[in-house]
Image 1 (cartoon, rainbow, N blue to C red):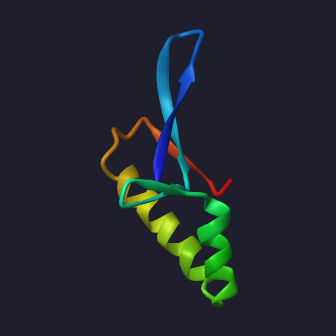
Image 2 (image 1 turned 90 degrees about the vertical axis):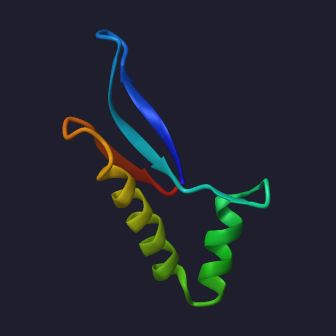
Length: 74
């Protein structure tokens, strides 16, 4: 998972993050289509989505309360 800051450019402050489903294995970035596709082929699409969502929520718990996370599978 990679977290991209969302910035209010008028005020110059961050107000959230977008959780992007990215997987790095041994230093190589695996395209999301590859690993979500593999999960779907194996009948594990819902489980892959749950892992991504659970990971994003765990990160959210570490952020100050004023910030939020938007999850994007794309």
